[in-house]
Length: 295
Image (cartoon, rainbow, N blue to C red; front, top):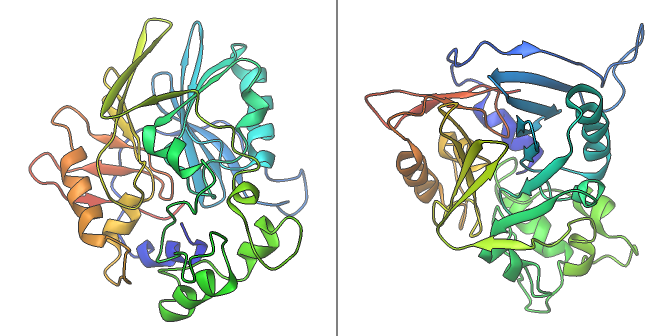
């Protein structure tokens, strides 16, 4: 999700969702200014935690037999997180569950490959098969050459700043050979492909605990997975929650589909939604409306 999109939800009121106990702020040096994105791990409830990398976040569930982890986010953060998990919990990551294939959430999982299996909706495998992948914010293959060109990124960026596109930094990060284009192979170079895929719903059981995976249908992505933690009465959802709170939109941003997904994902027994771009989100028991705040 574009970094500047976060400004679109800054004015949304935060509701108290869980007693979040801050466990670390390792992105800060002792006695000095922050180095890189602010990083922290907070307890959502019980053995469910949220790990933050600046404006991005993931979730993980600790069990006696290992950890079920959401998005790795990027290689640098994933390496930091692995060190934190090893130090704090002394059990390996057994599953990495991709929320979707987009380039700002999926990279970095290789650091967990020695112990973990990678799980995703079946459409993620198709998005990674070498064709031009589904991308957010009207970033599409405008000249049908199968590569991500400047126009593919900058036309939507300039048309709807902060809502669509990404900006020139896209090429700084993902144009690995600096030829002015990004191939699908370059985009997914740091994303281990899923070795377990599902179509509609799937249940993971580890160490006596359950995580249910749900494909909510078309919204911000075509390969989205929502992680539902029934014992914790919590859901981890990515990107479409923030999209649903954005009033402006560009072509193919699917704001209506995002709001519909929010309504479908609300579960009568689920109240806490640690999301990927806001501190947390609470469902109103009586409506499908949600509220969140910037990280």
